[in-house]
Length: 256
Image (cartoon, rainbow, N blue to C red; front, side, top):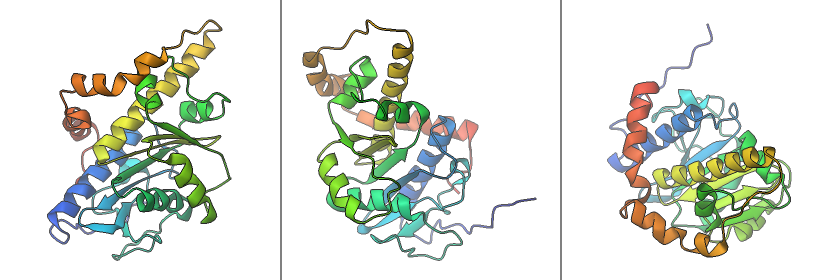
């Protein structure tokens, strides 16, 4: 039988702050799998280690997202070099994108990248994301685009990606997929939930034919304030505890 290697627990061997970030990031990987946003092993979520601004956590390359645990996450530097012993490699294409965002945006502590079918379908459309749904209005308040340059292996692409992202929280990678970033894992996940939902609605609406109604720009402009009001100022922290409870029921073990 093809078994996972034994992974010693890092609980108590890293700082409490790093352990909590590991638990949140492992949960995020499991949630991406649970929501059907994964693409075998070929996308990535990264998180900055608290108190160590130049160190990051990323997935062990080769594990499926539903297999990832807090202890199996790989701790790397800006060059993607592992800082702790690990039996797993790091995908170089994955960390090029993530290291670029983390380096340019010190307030960003989590970067989430997907290749979902609906997200990639919208990324291939000339107009990109359209204002067709309530979900789209959240993403459109802070959305950027980056042209496709092939697999993200070249250092030279980092400067162009960062320039295109600017201060946005959501990005559509043309002909490639979606990217979100946040001050926390919860914030990056909720941003991806809204962007992915907006893409799914768009593809479904377009399948119904012409005559699509667009949300007026003045409504989009007011959505950040409405979002703060509806979440009572809690933002993504309103839903994150419930998402963890769902994981505890459906995919336990992420916090090992």
